[in-house]
Length: 184
Image: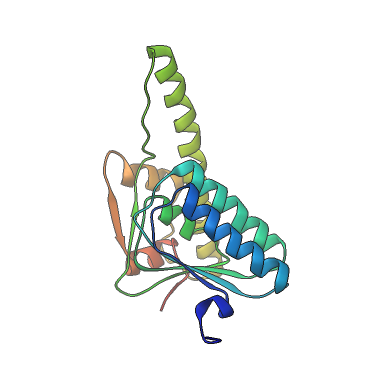
């Protein structure tokens, strides 16, 4: 039992991103943070994505864990799709398995109500999307500066690449463009 991943600070996030899955992950991260100060933590994503707002809660929480002195590796086995692809960007070190895939796309949401309410919702979601593009672009630039990316994506390239479609990116492409730091 001592060989279990929970005793080696490895968390497998293999469900949709939602309130329950985010809460469970944060509880495990909080436990490790409180009981093992400064330990290395790895979060392995194999997820179809999910809620942007719930995912951004976890993204910010991971940033807090990093600021508290933990080195966080985010990795993927199989796929990190949609919100899981954004969460992959949260770690100090971002890793993909050789046959894994990253899926990114414009923010998706549902809205209902009067026209003005829907228009207001669209404005808010566009603001969220700009922040997500900034997350990707900053990590791509940092990977280039660290020497792990040879052709880093810019914010405009990312915006153009995912416009009105699902954009599947292989591990090799992700490394080349700075969306991950390592393939292992």
